[in-house]
Image (cartoon, rainbow, N blue to C red):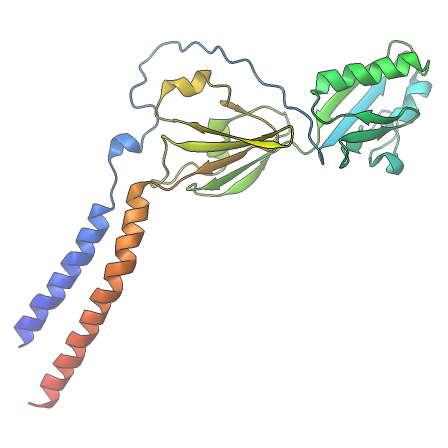
Length: 264
């Protein structure tokens, strides 16, 4: 009887081992760029400039030949939805409101949503000149809240804050701890918001075409989602189905063995 029980327990352990082994994926699907050879890869995708969106916070600094006249645009202005320091200190931060505008000192409401930083910079400079507030103003704009969210089968899902406003997809995945072994490398999803609509693009990290893709560089508020591969889904599914059965079987065996010993 004891020998029979040992055989059953060994068989159950073998089933669990097979479940674990069968979940292992093909190594070609795990490594990046398996077919890429040494050499130069042309990149015909220029670095994209992010479009300003609602709820973005913009750091805006204005300078001119007249520092005193410029100072008013670089001082704290809570009415404009900004917070900053005095002239020469940190630039003012302006919130893009629900209407897509910012409130700028002495100018008022300025449309920002849907524009690039360069376009908004030109518009502000033109308004300052047209209203005879400054001569030859120099306007610089930066995103205060440039960030990218990385979710799914990565080791450390996170929100990445980007101070230099330039981040590639590979850098974002690296900052999230890289993909797990279960991440679907050939089907990484990028969700981008443009003009009140969500644009979804899937990229293949096993292909060298990623280097020339317009989605190689990420934009502010992009979301990167790494799907689980079939090995992860099937292993979880098989495990959820078989492990309770195996454990129940082992429990019955233990109970039977105890009863057998008690009847001796």
